Structures are given as structure tokens and as C-alpha cells.
Length: 540
Ligand SMILES: Cc1cc2nc3c(=O)[nH]c(=O)nc-3n(C[C@H](O)[C@H](O)[C@H](O)COP(=O)(O)OP(=O)(O)OC[C@H]3O[C@@H](n4cnc5c(N)ncnc54)[C@H](O)[C@@H]3O)c2cc1C
Image (tube, rainbow, N blue to C red; front, side, top):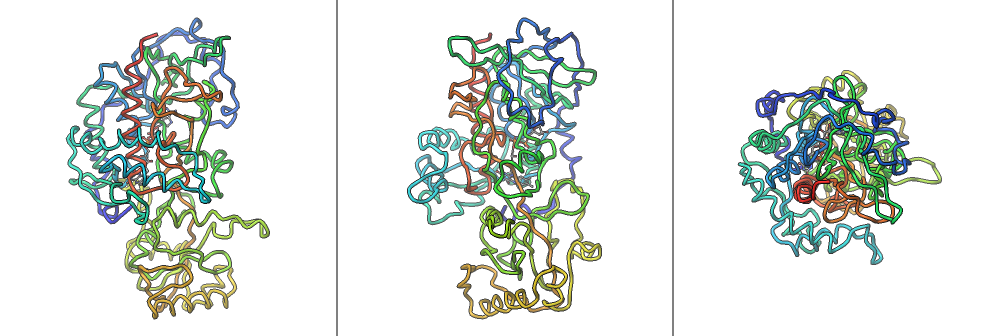
């Protein structure tokens, strides 16, 4: 995430001051249609066929033009845009506070310098080899980039003051210099970014309803003429029962990814386990909600990934500072055989994805989990795990890792051989790995994996090892959408009045994460597109 993410920031209480007040939904009418509503996180929702028309049966409790489901970065963006276009907007948020993973984030957002360069860069990042590409279309990316170049001026128009912090990671790709990411200057974190967004929502008087998970779309049945299901509104869970909200123009799903849905992760991600470093509300609800409208799915294997550390009994995982800062630390990653398998100082997404290789003969992910092995000089430099949520850590990692060593979460030993024994690795293999790596450091080159940054030997005992797993900044896949952010059904038809934006269905990347800030840049671009198109619908 770059260095700014490590800066200390204010506590979560700081944002409460800029949030809308809590408004629980109360039920005001009888809803026959809600009786059969299913839990939205259930995998069974994926198989649901479009349901019969509910219009005639539904007594609406509320009415507005656009319902936005999920109050994170994409939801705030869609709501602001729809409101500014004249729509009456209601935001439903599952939890008691807004922000989602956007609030947890480093506050980076992509706003390219020019359209052509951004498209070239993103196409290059979507290469699958041998002339093939992943499921990404150049014209779609052009439409995306035309919108995304507006991210920086749009954020400025809300009162933000961003600065350019990074350029395309893959410097050899065309357009890498055009593909730039920004951060809020005053507070270069997700907290700073969220302050700008939530203040804009509040200033506009947009209603945010907390503790109100959207549970089921209300739809009009597909007609025999082959037209798709139409979305009329949504049923949310209220404080004393379900509440049906009529969306005169459209529903926008911005409920984040499926980072906390074990079944979906086990089925679709490229290795298991994957742990989330983000918001626990992200349980894949957009997938189950859109299934009712017959939505197709796409890019479910796509992620923006990190290497993370998972502590017992703490639900959220911690991005690895050992890896994020590997360019200046004496640390290597080894697999379950005790062998290195990657250039540890690559960008975090590239490193994390090298954990996904499956060994069919051994019937195991040999690199998942892996081990971060380091020595005393690295131990005292910084906490191995980056505390998240950044503004309100659920676990305060000790500055010199001593508490985690004490608890046995970080393994410690006086010699490499002894350390290997504790890791249940053949000592001779780990000794050979470390001594070869140290020779590379002395020579200043790493012929095995091409590591050029942070070739610092592990030569200061004691030695330490900490397990590392693939971590999720966010999953990327979800209901398939077109460049209008409109959901496509399994027959490829645009579903009237249903839009998705953000990590619920990332539009501009697939297997490879192109650069820090791409996910939130996508929230901004697709959130505005969704908000604009939703508000432009004729009322039904
Ligand atoms: C530690 C960390 C750092 C990161 N740093 C960056 C970064 O610097 N730049 C970047 O581009 N990306 C970053 N990412 C990824 C990025 O934060 C996410 O991809 C992005 O914020 C997703 O935004 P969103 O609006 O789609 O979802 P979120 O911000 O996660 O919001 C989704 C909201 O929907 C709510 N919700 C879920 N289901 C329902 C439902 N049924 N009804 C109502 N509400 C619901 C959730 O409770 C949540 O509040 C980071 C992620 C993490 C975890």
C-alpha cells in the first residue's frame, strides 16, 4: 500500500462526528412478499431462479427513487451522484456505522492521467499469456477510464485535497506512467477519504438507514416475450420486522465483496484459506440479492490480495508488514518444505498470488500457508502485522513483536536449525535456504527469484518465523455488469433498474491487481456511473 498506510491515524471516534445519525428502520406495513425471504449470505441464493412478480402483493413501507444497498465508498459515491441528479435516495447499511472496507483502507484511489494510457495499462495487466486475455474488454475499459479520469477532480469537488502517490507497478507495461493513484493529503488513509465522502453525504441530507441489511429484491416477473426480470424495490430487515422499500427508479447494490463468506471463498478463490483484512459486513450479499433477478456472475477468482497474518480468535487478519516492507527488511518467505518460492519484495498482490499454486501430486497448496522467516534486526523494527481497522485496531500488535513471541504466535529459536524444527521443516533444507539467500545478499544479486530490493542477510540471531496466508483487501467478482454498471442476467440481458458498483463487482481488473488504489478508483468511477444511470430511469 505504500508507506503512507503505516502512518498513525486518529481513532474511529473521529469519524462519528461526520456521520449521519443512526436511523433504524421501523416496519409500517404488512408485507406478504417478505414471508419467504431467505438469508442473503446463503450459497443457496446462487441457484435461485427469477421469482414471480411481487408487485401486486407488496404493501410498500417506504418509497424513494433510488435505494443504495451498502454504505462504503461505492455506496457513498452512487448516492451522492444520484442525489445531485435530482433523485430521492435512501442508503441501507447492514451495520451500525458506514465506511465498510473503504474506511479500513489506505485511502489510495486511482485517477489516471489520460484515457489511452490507462486502457493500455489495464489491458496489459489482464494478459493471460499466449495472446489471450482474462474476461476484460478494451471498449469497456475505455468507458471506465473516461469516467475514472474524473476521480481526482470529483474528489476535489467534495472538498478533498489529494496528491499523486504512486504510478503503475508494472513499469514495463504501456501506460504505466498514466495510471496513477492519489491519496487525501491531510489524512492519507481510508479514514481521511471516508471523512470527505461521509461529509458530502451528510451535507446533502441523504438518508442513511443503519442496521438495515437489504435481504431480498422485489421483482416483477420476466414476461413471456423474453424480457428480463425487473427490479421494483427491496426488502430490508428492520428493527421489528421486514421493511419493503419501493425504488421508483432503481436499486444500486454496493455491498462489498464476499471476503467473509467461507463457502464462496472455498468454492471460487484460487487457494484456501484466504483471510480478510477488511470489513466483516462483506459476506457476498450482492451475489445472493442479484440472483433473484437471474444475474450472471463473473470474475469470482479475482482479488486484490496481500500476504496476511492470522491470529487465533481475532476475526480480521493483519496485512503483513514483513512483506509490505520487505524492500528494507531481512526477511524471506519459505514454503512448507522450507524453500523460497518468490521475490519477497514484489508488490503485495504479486507475492500473495504466488501462494495459490496447487501441487496436485502432494495434494496441497505448498505455499499456503507459507512462513516469513526473519532475524533479530527485523524483529525490533516494526510490528509484523499492520493493525486494522487502521483507525481502530481490534488487536494492538506490540511494537517489537515481543507479545506475539511470548504467546507463541511468532516462533523463536537461537539457530536456523532449531527454528526449522519448530516449524516442522527439515532443518538441513531451511539452513541451505538461508545460507544461499545470505550468499545472494553478499553478491548483491538473487539469481533464484530476482530480488533486487532489500537483499539484507539473515545473520543476527535469534531467528523468527510467522505463518503467512493469502489475505484479501477485497474480493473482486460478483454479479456481471456492463459498462453502464447495469446487471446482466444469465441470458446476457440488462436487468432493468438494477446496478452494482464497487467490490461487489469490480469492473476494471480481473486476476491481477494493477496498482494500489484501483479498487477505490473503481468504486468512484462505477459508483458515479451507477448513480447517474439509476437516477436517469423513468419511474415505474
Ligand atoms: C486494510 C485495507 C486497506 C485497503 N487499502 C486500499 C486502498 O488504499 N486503495 C484501494 O483502492 N483499495 C484498498 N482496499 C480495498 C478497498 O478498501 C475496497 O475494495 C473498497 O473499499 C470496497 O468499497 P465498497 O464500497 O465496494 O465496499 P465497502 O467499503 O466494504 O462497503 C460495503 C458496505 O456494504 C455493507 N453491506 C454488506 N451487505 C449489505 C446488505 N445486505 N445490506 C446493506 N449493507 C450491506 C457492509 O456492511 C459495508 O459497510 C483496502 C482494503 C483493506 C481491507
